[in-house]
Each structure stands twice: as C-alpha cells, then as structure tokens.
Figure (cartoon, rainbow, N blue to C red):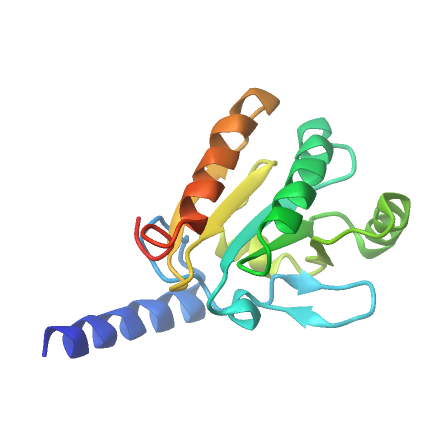
Length: 171
C-alpha cells in the first residue's frame, strides 16, 4: 500500500515538474525533457539510459572548468563499464556546438546541444559548470552549480559513490 502511494506521489510530482518546468531538486525524479540533440540530430533524454547512473553536465566551449571536467568525465565513463552514462549538454548555439564537438574528437561521453534551452530551464541552469548526478532509479542524487576546478575531486567521489550498488538508488 505504501509503495502504491509513494509511486502515485512520485508520478504526480513528476507530471507537475514536467508540465510546469519546476526546478529539479535533490531527491526528486528527473524532469522528462529532451536534454539536447546529438550532432546527428538524435534527441536524448535521461530516460533513454534507465537503470544506469546518469551524469548530466552543462558546459560551454569558453568555460575552462567545463573543458577540464569533460576529460575527467570521459575517464569516468570508461571506468563505469556500462553502469554510467555521461551526457554533456552544450549550452551554446548549434554551430558553436558542432565546432566544439569536432575539436573534441571521438569521445565516449554523449555530447548534445540544448538549442532550445529546454533542459537548461528544467534543471535551473543559471551558471556553468552545472552538473546533475542521477541514480539508477531516476532520482537526483546530487546537483552542483557554478563550481570551480577545486571541487572536481569531491564530485568524482560522489559519482563513484553513486555507482556502488548500495547507494546507486538512494540519496
């Protein structure tokens, strides 16, 4: 009975956040919005990677901490061995995104462009870098806004902790 009530409450909150673009918060289900579009034109959502820990990182080519972070996230993606999906959401216009993605070359993180700012609004992105760590259950485990390079080690530890079986579904 409690599970049914919890599921109904979660569904209600999820629906409310999706239609009204309410800010996403730790502990809540992620907004079901298109995070962005790949260079090939495919839309990407967190739900496309259900059952994995998902790291959504908003970035721009001019952001030095973002560029450093992409290399670190690339390493985490490789070490995640299929249990982690990094989605790097570029907030620049489509042409700048294409140029930046071309300069980055072949990466294992999923590079997308939020050309209509839909995911930026849903995740209340006001400064970058901006990172959201999502558990395998689709709930937000952590959110980091406007941090510097000195915070990256702690964030990496948080992502690694999210990948441990006991904590991947809880905050």
